[in-house]
Image: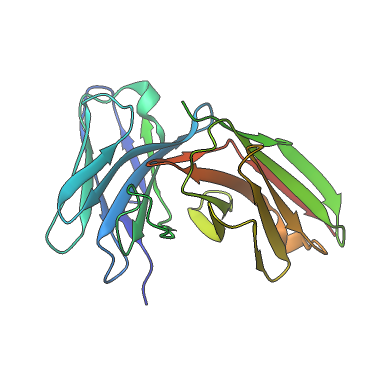
Length: 117
Length: 109
């Protein structure tokens, strides 16, 4: 069974631009979560989508948004990029919702490394 | 606000040693605690998940314990190998998954 895939793997953008990252979950998984990883802040939760609805959200500005499609694939968008948005963006999938406390293991993709110049 | 702390931040040991990684959290109202491994430039691999009602979980040479009342978890790695070199992250779930900063482990041949 294929794992979680993320595209693109690497991306270079300039301040003020916008970017869209894509995540394809493991087949059959309906929950997709997004995380940002930086050397200073570590891994931080962005949001979780389940059945095309955002179920939980972290403490990030409105520039960060996402969506999930009927096939469970998810996209994350960052508008008006700032230098501080440079990070590794990780996507994780699981069979069911995780924000409700269900005992679900999340499976992580390899990440998209975004560099903002 | 939940805070997760991992000590030490980095650890270097010779091959074959048994070692313990520590994780502490401030809010005991958690659903579960997970340990992950991250190789450089890669995503996370789930190692062990301990439910809030459990005290420990084992997988091969790995054993993780959970003491909710004291807000602590340990990851025990037996007979360490160079292939165990990676960053180990613990994360607690109470709605959101909150991660510690990780322990960077280096096992020397």
